[in-house]
Amino acid sequence: MRNIGIDVDSLTLLDQIVRKLSDGFAGLPVVDDGQGDLETMRPVLEEVASRLTDNYPYFHPLYAGQMLKPPHPIARLAYMLSLYINPNNHALDGGRASSAMEKEAVAEIAAMFGWDQYLGHLAGGGTMANLEALWVAGRSHPDRMVLASTQAHYTHERLSQVLHLPFRKVPVDRFGRMDLDGLQRILDEEQVGTVVATIGTTATGAVDPLPRLLKLRDRYHFRIHADSAYGGYFRLVDSLPSATREAFDLLGEVDSIVVDPHKHGLQPYGCGCILFKDPSVGGFYKHDSPYTYFSSDELHLGEISLECSRPGAAAVALWATQKLLPLERKGTFASHLAAGRNAAIELYHLIAADSRFLTAFPPELDIVIWLPKAASASKASNLSRQLFEQAAKHHLHLALAEIPEHFFDLEKAGMDRDRTTLTCLRSVLMKPEHDSWVGQIWTIVCQCLNELD
Ligand SMILES: *Cc1c(COP(=O)(O)O)cnc(C)c1O
Image 1 (cartoon, rainbow, N blue to C red):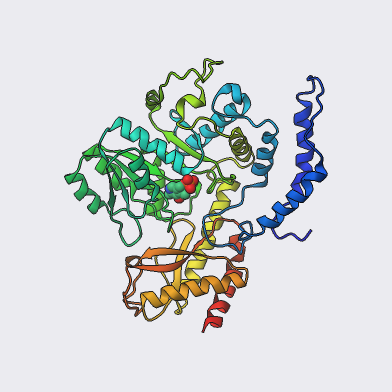
Image 2 (tube, protein in one colour):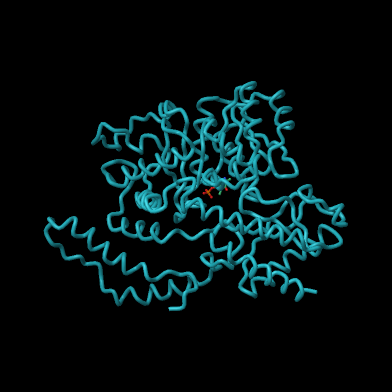
């Protein structure tokens, strides 16, 4: 098979490992499996395979658009393997091994942030993990306001509505980071319970200025929740700009952290993680449901989680991935993150050096926003959309994003400011392979722009 990035070889390994799993239960009496004939499933699966080609090729380096990163083969294999058991990490009765593996894997993530005392677990994703963070924030600071920047993920405003917590947005500076003078004005006016610091915004990868935010906390006594759903793993990367690095170095000082293993942690979807610095927040979760069984003196994961049934498979996949690729500062996993970031910096320089294009600021993490220049913001926005479509015809898949115009120097570019946002191209260079493909990506971009002229 031509290697276009879909791995088939690892299935032989799965075949052998499933047999090992089956051997582990060899003492059981034989049952007639009654699972049906493979040949009746074949046409259905063939149809599935054909329908699934209606997707962008997320696994390929020429997919350089949204935040989509293929799971590591070991995550895929461990996930599939555990589906033969299908454990539920709600309660130990539903998944003893996978619950233990969840605790071990989460301990490794907590250690990445320098925490050995904490409360934490996996969740369905960043949204559920942030819901839990804001729920605890609301329980510990009832009726007080939640603040997040205009570039924070929109989920914080919506989750605050769900939790009936007052919410307000804080402006950002021209680098997409929370403007702390703007924050301080709000702190002087309102009863603020929690400030959400975004450590890697979804649009541009901007990191809020945590060092100064921590100083403001000393004065105004709010909680800090770090939403590092996207950026959290960059804590392991040395080669960050110094202000960004300082924020990551202080991440352990916040009250709660969200990180998404299904974003940068090589996991299939359905894997977020929430960590609280103070384990006593576990008291907020107390319930007296008769439906949860107590077969162990240990704390059930279901007792410290808002979600009840959760896939044990997600924990098994994460555990296996971290076993193969430990969360170490100089390790292979970290070097892969750094490779994506190198690719983003290289792309940024190619764009910045080309007078036909405009870009905002150098990437703090691995996201580049850029667009072709034109006489006005609206004309450039149209051109972005055309370039996006033209590139797709050449198998180069970019993404579009609406970005505030003040992130760009329109005056210097000689462009009319006839719109408050620019429709930009957004390239999230999450795959280490991007590092060796940037040249090719740029060649296609330039060719496409010529074709549009
Ligand atoms: C992706 C993301 C979220 C939402 O997480 P999901 O896993 O998509 O539910 C929240 N915050 C930030 C900063 C994100 O990048």
